[in-house]
Length: 617
Image 1: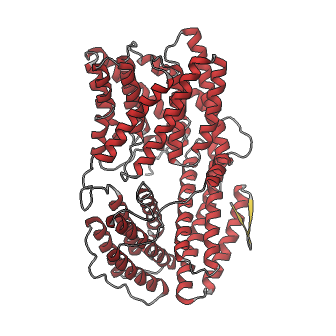
Image 2: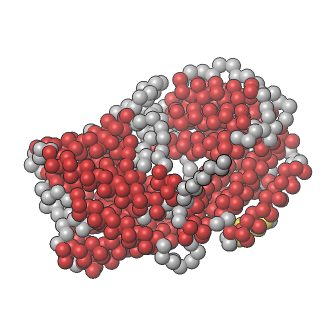
C-alpha cells in the first residue's frame, strides 16, 4: 500500500523553518536592560518623547545584536545605528519643511540609494534598512524635538546597547582574557571543522564537511575583524589568537586537498587539529601533536602545517590574514552592479509607493501613524529575510499575533508602568525571536505599540494590522514587476564575484608564485564568495516559480566553481611538494573550465575574458 505524500512548496517550507541553537542569555539580558529602562527614565523625568526615540534606537540595535564576537559587534551594531540616525535626521527635516509630493520623491530617492548599498553585504543591508525605517519615522512621528535632537537621542539608545555589549561579559568570556568574547570559540571551531573534514575524507560527507569548514573560517574571519585585532596587535594574547587563526589556513588547505583525493585516511590525522582546538579554547599549550604520516603530498602538507601550527601557538606571531580587504572601488561597483541596481529599484518602488499611499491615507482619513506603512515595506522587501512569499506570510501572521496580544495586555495593564514593563519583556525576547521572522515581527509589534501608547497616542492594534496587510500587497506587487535587464541580478552579481575570485586563486597557483600568504588569502576570498553565491542561489530557488525561474541553472555553475576551487587547492598542495602537476590535476582543471562554459550557456550567463581561458560567470 503506497503512502500519499504532499510536497511542501519551498517558500512555505522556509516560512515554517526556524533557526536552532542555545538561547543567547547574555543578549536577552542586554535586551531587557536597554529599551525599557531608557523609556522608564524618560517617563520619570518627564521627557517621554525622548525615551520613545531612544527606545527605538535600542530596539533596532537589538535586532542586529546577533551571536558573534564582542568586537565584531561594533560594526554590526554601530554602522546601522549611524545610518539610522542619518535617516531620522533627513526624515525629520523633510517632513517638517516639504510637502507630501516632494517628501515622497525624496524618500523614494533615498530608497534607491539604500537598496543599492544593501547589496554590499549584511552590515550594509542593516544600515540601509535602518536608514529607511528611521527616515519614515522621522517624517511621520509627531515629536516635539527637532531633527538633530532626535538623531542624538536615537544614537544614545543604540549606543547604550552597544556599550552593554562591549562591557558586560558573556558566559565563558572571562576564560583566559576578558577582552575575548566569541573570538576563541570561533577560531577553535575552525580546527574542529578541519578535524571533521579529515574524518570524512573518502566518504560521502566530505563535501558537506568542506562547506562547514568554509562557514567556520568565514565566522572566525568576521570575529577577528573588530577594532584592535589588527596587524600590530596591542597585547600578547591578541597576537597569539591572531597567529592561531593564521596557522589554521595551511591546515585547512591540506585537509581540502586530502578530501579532494577521495581516499580515506587514518583517524590519527584528525587528532592534531582537535588538540589545537582544545588549546585555543583553554589558552593552554598544545602538547605533543601526533604525526599523520607522510606517504602522500597532501599528508606531508598536513604534517608540515601541524608543525607550523605548534610553532605558531608557542611563539604567538602570525601573518595578518584575517581581514577581508574590499576596496572602496569594489564596494562602489557592487552597489552599482546588476544586483545593486535591481534591488535598489525594488526598494525605491516599494518604499516610494508605500509613502505615497500612506500620505494619501493620512490626508483623507487623518491616519496619525502613516509612517508605519513604508517602515513595514522596508522590512518586507529585504531578500536576506527569506523568499518574498515567505516573508510576506510571516510578517502578516506575526503582526496579527502581536497586535492581538498587545490589545489584551493594553486592556488590563496600568499605564504607563505596565506598558514600560511590556517594553522590557519585548526587548528581552527580541534576541530569541530573531530566529524566525514571524516571531520577530510579533515581538517588535508589541514593543512598538507599547511605545506609541506610552507616548500618549491611543491604542492602535487594528490600524497596525491594516497597514501591514497593505504593505504586504504593495511589496508582493512590486516584487513581481518586470525590471530593466536580467532578473536575479543579485545571484548573477555574486556568481560574477565568485568566478573572478576563483580565477584569481587559480591564476596565482598556476603561476608558480611562492607567496603562500597571498595564496591563502585568495583561497579564503574564493571560498567566501562561493558561499555567498550559494546562499543567494538557495534563497532565490525558494521563491515562487515566477521569480525562481530566473535563476535556473545557476546552482550548476556554483557547483562547478566549488569543484574548481577544490581542485585548485589540491594543485597548490601538490605543486608545493613536487613542483609539477600530475595529468589528473591538469585534466580535471580543463574539464571544469569546459563545464563552466557549458553551464554559462544553460543558465544564460554572460562570459568574461580572462587571461588564457574564457569562463562563465
